[in-house]
Structure formats: C-alpha cells, structure tokens
Image 1 (cartoon, rainbow, N blue to C red):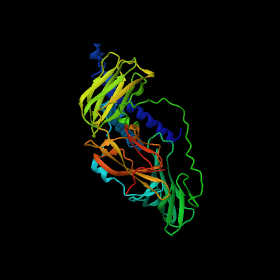
Image 2 (cartoon, rainbow, N blue to C red):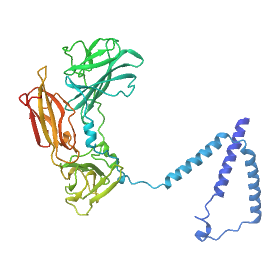
Image 3 (cartoon, helix red, strand yellow):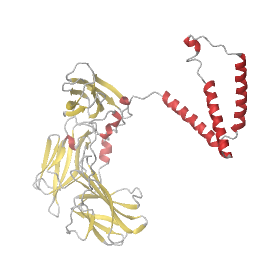
Length: 469
C-alpha cells in the first residue's frame, strides 16, 4: 500500500467513526426511550464506563488532529447537503395550494373609446389595405420600414412589409406573416424573402389582387406574389401558391377534452353560450372547466345533463385579478339533470366546473352542458353604399347600429360572417361600440350578392346597391 492509499484509508476510517458517534449522540430521547416501553434499565459496570470514556477521548483527539487534513471539497459538500436538507424541510412545511381555486387573469372588454380610436387610416391596395405603421426595431436581423400591406381572408390575416438586411443595406427584403383567425386553421407562416437584385431597401407602394408592387431605394420596381411567397417578373406572371409546411404525425395519446384546472383554460379559449356542449368525464378524478362571457345583467341559467351519471355543477364568477366567487353549485347526491339559476347575474367572466360526485364516470357517453346568459339587444348590420372600382370590382361600405349602452362582442363562431366569403374585408368588427357607427369597414367583392349576417340579422350588397357619393 503506498503512502497516499494509506492516508486515504485512515481518513475514511475516521469519517466512519465520526458518523457512528454522531448517530449515537443524536439518538432521539423523547420518541423511543426505555421508560416509554416500560423496560427495566440495565446497570453498566463502572469499569466499562471508564473504558468508554477513555476511548471517546482518544477518538476525539484523533478526529481533531485529522480535521485539518480533510479535503476542502468534503466541507463544501457537507455545507451543501445541510443547505439542501434545510430547503427540503422548508418546502415540506409549506401548505399545498388548491389548484381548483386558482383562476386565470382574463382580459377585459375594450371600451367604446378604444374601439373607435382604433380605426385604421388606410387605402385600398388590391385585395388588401396599405397603411403606415410604427417601426419597433430590428426583426430577424433586418430592419423593416413603416409601410404595411394587410389582407384579411375568411381564415387568416396576412401582413407584408418591406425593409433591408441590417448587415447589408443594399439587400432588400419582404417579410410576410400569416396569422390564422382560429387555432384550427391549417396554414401559418412567418418568412423573409430577399429581393433577386440588391437594390437597397424595399417599400410596398401598391398591389393588384394579391400581387404587391414594390419600389427599391435605388428606384427599381419589383413584384411579389403573396400566395406564392416569391418575387415574380410581372403583374401577369402565373405562379403556383406556396406549399403549406408538412404536418407532422405523432402517436395518438390520451388527452382530456377539457382542462382539469381553471388556470389552464386559456388553452381552450371561451365557449359558446346558448349551445349544447358535449364533453366527457374520463376518470373519477377528472375535473372539467369551461369559460363563458356574460355581456349584460339579468337571468343566468346553467344546465347539466349527465346522461345516467352523478356529476356536480359549479358556477364561478371571476374578476380581472384572478379571484373567483361561487355564485351557484348543484352537488346533490341524486343523479339526473343539474341546474343553476342566478336571477340577477352581473356582467363578467364565468367559469363552470363539472366533476364526478361519487366516482362514477363514462368516457364513451358525453354529458351535455349549456350556458344561457342574459342576452343584449341585437346589433343591426347596415349597408352604407357600394363603390365601383376601376378594375371592374366593387367595394361595399358597411356600418352598424348597437342599441345597447355598452360594447358587444360578436365573433365568427357567434354568427358574424359574410356569404359567400368575400375576396377581402377591411377591419370587419368583432367588438361593436354603442350607437350608430357609420362607414366602419369595407369589403371588396365582384358585384354579385354579398350578405353580411350578424346573429340572424343580415344585409345584402350588390352592383345595384346605392352608390357611394
């Protein structure tokens, strides 16, 4: 055995002896002492006590002499272990929070002033609008300029803007964003395409259909086809649309059809009111949470048809600070239809919980949930006039009348759509300010009947509609 191995062996022996003595000295005295078990204590001869005392003194002397030889890493490890143990004890002592009462922070409805001040100052450009926007800085190592072309189709918002590469200002670029209106839209993209010739910064100056007209800093003109995501040689060149990115197939895994915790509701957005919703309780511990909006005060009714099982129903009113107040609950032990009626419900965000009361569930038979809030008066769609464009197309100008004293939200899911889908619309509203709002947005169409339907009310524009002055 060499010298280093001999020293290491001695050090390890000393550590084991220290651990043994620590265990002996730290033995709990109030948990399992002989008196606790009514045992007769054993008398220890005096000579044995003397020998133990002598051995203890010898060991203490040896340990003191060897402490300076212990590696610094050992001391650091000991300190780290003690710190970790302290943290674990601290965490263990903290009470666990109830995730069933942690509600998300919902955004509020914009005010009428915010809606009316948000109207864009734009000009029609092909199937889109052209407007000047604020430049926020470098994007993907290129510098964008303020002129933006935007198109809104039936399923997406498409935005294009020009600029140049920051490290090479002579290289112009076009950036295109494609944002789906809703999460199930199949195609979205964010790409930057360089100009075929280095002619400096690019600026969008107009459009024909979905083909952009672009001017470079050096005075050259380029054309860019938005559906194809590529530069073309002319306004007439025919090119195929860009191929959507491939969809990756993943193995099917079990996914719950509604969030188990209210804080996860943002992944599902809000649900439709006045609609029979079909969902499942997939296990005895499955909690289904839903989010609804009530836009006015009045009678609120929430119904649950569990289809043979015994499910509970709870309705919670939440505020913008993430607090929740239970306004009604039906957790009776009998099966059958559950219903909560709030005669004077206030405007706001409501969350509904459905869960099993007795452990029964059915992952093949859905329950039916329905949220019926008080309804505001219907917003009236209005056709202002129709203008004929130089290229033979037409532009319909629309406004509306909201008879309520507050902002009303009507999305496409709530029946806010055109039939047939127009080529393009500019700033079609989903939030409606109170009162008569004139000439709020425009729609480009071919002159045949174009109908705007708004929660059952509708108005139709065509080439024979009153002309714009």
